[in-house]
Structures are given as C-alpha cells and as structure tokens.
Length: 316
Image (tube, rainbow, N blue to C red; front, side, top):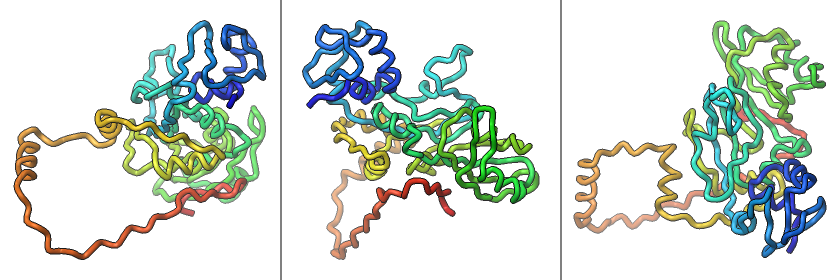
C-alpha cells in the first residue's frame, strides 16, 4: 500500500504537511535515488532521503504513536530554540520512543495550561486544521466585572487587525473583589486572540490558562510544569474526534513504564522504609475467608463525539 510522501513524513514527525511540501518543491526529498515531486507516493521498502540524510524506515512505518499532555507554566516558550535564551517547553519533556514531539498549537509566554504534543504528525495536523473546528477553552481572570452587553459583543464578534474574531461561548466563573473569572471558547488559533478580544473592550486580562483542547480536559493531577502520557479511551477519543485510528502502541519494558510514571508521581519512600515493607510482604499471609466478590465497575463511554459547530464550556 502506497501513500503520499508528505503524509508519510508528516505522520513520522518530520514536519507539517505544508513544511514537507516546501521541502519537496526545493528538491530536498528523494525516493530510491530520484528527486521526488509533489503527488509522488511511497510504499514500505522504498529508500527515502530528506535533505541528504537517510530516513529511518522504522520511524516511517513502525513507530508507535505517542501523545503527551503538558501543563505549561508562565515563562516558557513553545519554540524548540529561543534566540533570547528563554526556557522552552521541550526542555521539560521526555525523549520520544521514535521521531520528535510536534506541538498542537502554541501558547504565548504569559499563558499557562494544556498543550498536547504528539509524534504523529497527521494527528497534529488534523487537530490544528480549521476545518475540524477544535474547541480551545480558556479560564480567564480579568480586572473588574464585565457587563452583559460586553459579553454579548464578544460573542457576536469584534473586528481585530487580522480580521473578525469572537468567542463561541463565554460563561461567568466566579471571583471576588476586583478579580473575576470567565471561561471562554474559541475555535481558532490566532496569536494572542483571547487577550486581544478582551482588550478590544477595554478589559485587562491578569491571568490566562488553557484548560481544554477538543475532547481533552487538563487532568486535575497534572501539576504545573509536569507531563503525562495519554492512553486508553482518552487516546482513542482524541483520534476519533478527527476521524483517525491510532496504531497499536508498541509494548514497553519496565524501565520505560517507570520513566513515564516518575514525572507525575515522585517516589518519596526512603530505603529503610522500603526494606521494611518488602520484609513484611514476604511473610505468609492467612487465607482470606471473605468469598464475596466485588461487583464489576461499569465502564462509561468517553469516546462519544459531540456534534460539530456546538462549542460547549465544560461544566455548563
């Protein structure tokens, strides 16, 4: 089975489809010794080179698809290398099993919260593509109360310097004194769009956090500056949202499983306590007389898709 070159390379994390298409136009991609052209296809077994470097067949065709959630703190930037020497989000992430991390959208240096990263370029491309209308939900703290008229104006749309923009949904979320919280939803990824919309109405934003991207809500246990791997039904729901099917993840050894667990749960057990616990575990245990079986936990369907064009703020 053959596929288009840009699709295969993007899925393996070599760049977005648009970036790969640019490399093809510049003559930097070859297949079996022949310079590739837009529209060419490749199949398993073909020898590919990207900008003169051989491309790993394992990375192209056999790589497990990894998806990672990161809770970005204020002060980090989303570029791989920052000319000003600021800390990047990639300095806080583990090395992927194959390929490289592709960030699904960006957050500016003063915005914190959820960022999805993946080694699957095709998944990243679909999550960011405007046609899929992914909800981006933010918790916003502003100075002063906002009138219902201003809220309606932000729902109807405001003309910004790069075109009309609006909140697809906006809800009050409490607060006291001068600080008031709101949850807003947008379906675009323009630079500083949330801040600029509020500023267009003379409202000052004092804190901004992304709490949801598409079907993924930032987990409560994911602390600031930490990451966690996405799997199971949550991973399936993310792929289903953009009409893709994830490949079966390659089995990982004990060391890799421990590596995944460490960033979200630090091991605080001391050596003597651990030895005492192991000694206690080695003692024979009496047979249990409780034969009553626990009822099986009912599984819930978390992969149910929401209809398009229906932005919804969680909890409302």
